[in-house]
Image (cartoon, rainbow, N blue to C red; front, side, top):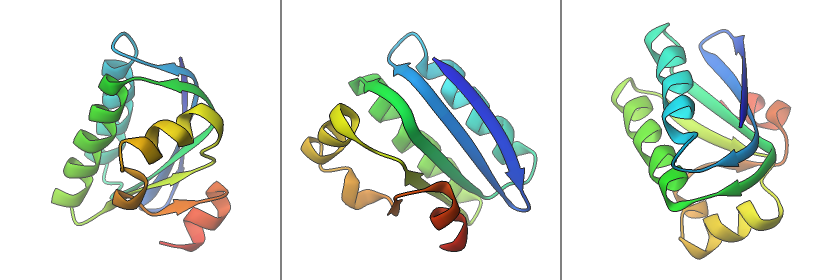
Length: 110
């Protein structure tokens, strides 16, 4: 999995590509925790390049959202499609996060 982050004031866009599973989940959580520890309160997770997410990956999304909430922030999702969107819908997690089509729309929603 590849993870790239860009900062936008008190928000960070974390772009994910590849597979988010038990092997890559710790790196994903670490990248998000780094952004939160640097003072960003809102994380926009761009999932347009994400091809697969496992149950461990879903747990990571929930753990990061909890950390962001404790800092009076939030996790916003964008670019969900295909298998990843199906997994989020089946796990009933789509309703737990603000979901946008693009990272630009998510930034405007903060």
